[in-house]
Length: 425
Image (cartoon, rainbow, N blue to C red; front, side, top):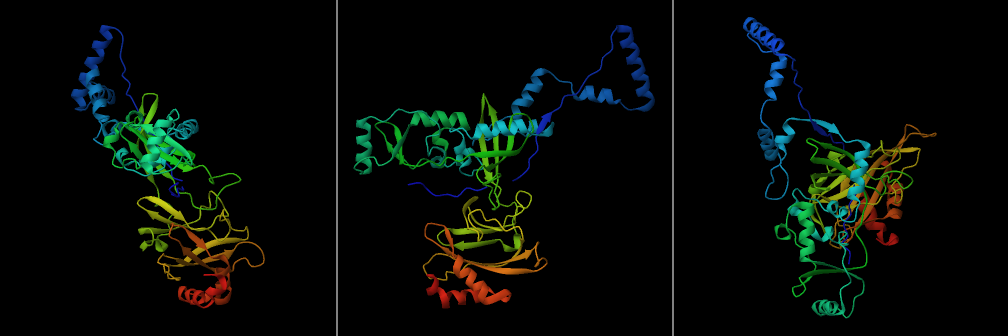
């Protein structure tokens, strides 16, 4: 019952700190009067003010004036996003420390918070509530009683509960959203698609899995110590023994300080980072509809043996990543290196109504007796109704071997048509 959405995901941000100015005073009325006279004489000679007077003038104003300025800088927009222009204008950017990055990682990875990174949104009103509450968002609930379960089964037509039943009352949902976003449930643009029973004023979602995913905060910035712009990447496959050879698409998340925690303002996948522009296309692909097929360059700094990555981006989210020829982790051998993508094509070569993908990739040898030379690789991807692609490894290798380095997409399609039955295409 889990909705399958691939969320992959490095980007740097800066942070800000508001500076205050210092005033300098003298002690003793006589000395103060002498200073005034000297300043007046100096001003009459030059027609200019001193730096000290400028600094003092700039920082004059009552406490109420400054409080009003701060209030204006933190005004709330209708969708709950904070407008921080006034506060940011006088701020000095600073980068988040490693300790602070870890604190934000720990905060987001709590059960009540990770769901805010499971969808993309420019305002909190656009959060995907199905993803946010998928596993209950850390809200404690007691097991539904037998009468309530019977009412749920009657409503759904099920004979029994086959998996776990997550259930949240309207009050629990509304209280949670007010705390985390500043908005009520009625202000959200994407209501829950769960089963709702008005007699219990409760929403129900039956599922046997979880959408939990951990994230790492790798950069961030603040202008006023209240609003923070953070960069997150999915923890799995980012580094260490299980490091992926795929391009990792980061998230840019904005939060504002609220009590002991934070409110979530926006979350955007940075899908534009690392694109190979001349091999990235806006295209119609079934079953997705209008998407951007993105070719991502290798992340050599993160992993020297990584390969090119192909992904389908729809509505700001990564819908799927195509598998690599070098296994699940898409790692190249130490002796070879990705050079370029020569061609990408989007046929339906098997006529099943779902878009397939043909690519030609160039590699070069960087070690061994063949250093300085290279080869081309053909890849045949079969698309499926569920929105994923199968890499047809055996026919791809056979096509490359038969056609050689002069191969074209048309040659590969002709090979697939002629020999497809041999490989079960």
